[in-house]
Structures are given as structure tokens and as C-alpha cells.
Amino acid sequence: MIPAVAVLSTITFSSVFAAPPSQNPAEQNRYIDLQMLGINDLHGQLDTVKKINNKEAGGADYLATYLKEHKKQNPNTLLVHAGDIVGASPPVSALLQDEPTIEFLNDLKFDVGTIGNHEFDEGIDEMKRLIYGGYHEKTGNFKGANFPYVAANFYNKSTGRLFLPPFTVKMVDGVPVGFIGVVTTDTPNVVMPTMLNNVQITDEVEAINKSTQQ
Image 1 (cartoon, rainbow, N blue to C red):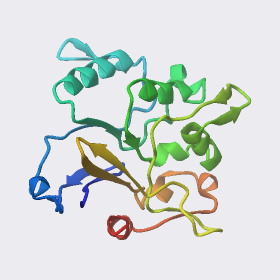
Image 2: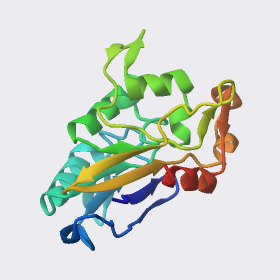
Image 3: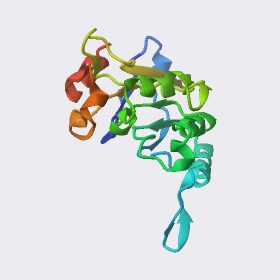
């Protein structure tokens, strides 16, 4: 069965669906009603509230309620994020190394995410600690994200290996849905060079095409 494929990056969030061929005639030409709810550029704004049309909007409570209400409308729902979830954050998140923001996404049961330029703000090691868990002198031990992060074009120059898995596949009502993450190639233009030591970011399209063949 060929999975549906979704591409996650900081500037694009698109999906391409393929009719899944099967040996079972009953499975041929089978489609499901899949809802993907995506966010990006949260920047740890868990307590930030603005007024839009004289109504308060924003903040973790508002976002959580919105996502939960829409998730109720379709059992085949995936929660995804396309990066810049942390970094340039207000004190409620920044003072605790943005751990509260990752915990917020864990509580909402996000399914997959990728990285934006602000995930590099404190370097690769801190990025990986937020994703996989680890110790920080300010906050102690942290368990990390409960969902996978993917990036198909984000390499360690020294080893030639990817820092993160290029893709992940989620099963939704028996149908595999693949997610490929990519980092935009202009990232070195907006991130301090010291935070990208030993990092190589390759062409997004080539990385996506390579991953779809796996």
C-alpha cells in the first residue's frame, strides 16, 4: 500500500494523496476522510492574548480548545506542527528553556513535528534535548517530546548522517500516512553561524523526492 504523503516545513504545509493499491479488491480505491490540524510559529506564546475584532484570542487555552473542538469533528485527525514552536519566546516558556511549550504539545497529543529556524536559537544540543529529553542545569531532567520530529535535509557535516529521521508514517483507519520534514535552505541566512556549526542543509525538493522513494 502506498501511503499518503504530507510535507512539513516552516514555509509549506502541503499534502499529496495517492490512491492506495492493494491485493485485496475490497481495499482498492479506498479513501478515508482525514483531517490534519497544523500550527507553526507558536514561539512559546502560552499566555499571550491579543484582541481581534474586540475578542480575546491567542494563548494556550484558546489554541487547545480550538484544536480539541475540531478534533471531535473527525476521529481521523492528526495534529502536526511545522516548526518555530519554540525560540523568541515570552518568559512563561523561555525562563524554563521552552520546556513548557513542548509539554503543552505533549498534553495535546501532537502526532508529528519538524524544525524551523528558531529551533536552532540555542544550538543543536539544546534542540535535541527538547526533542529527545535530557538534563539542563536550569531545569533538571526533561523527558522531551512524546511525538516524532522529522527533517530529511538536515545533516551532520562530519558524519554525513541526518540529525533527525527523514520521515515517519502514521496509520489512520488502516491507511498509512507519511510525513516528511524539511528545513528551509535559507535557514543559515537567519540563524547565527555559531549555532549551525557542523550543519549542512540540502535542497528541500531533492530531500523530499528521496524520502518518498523509501
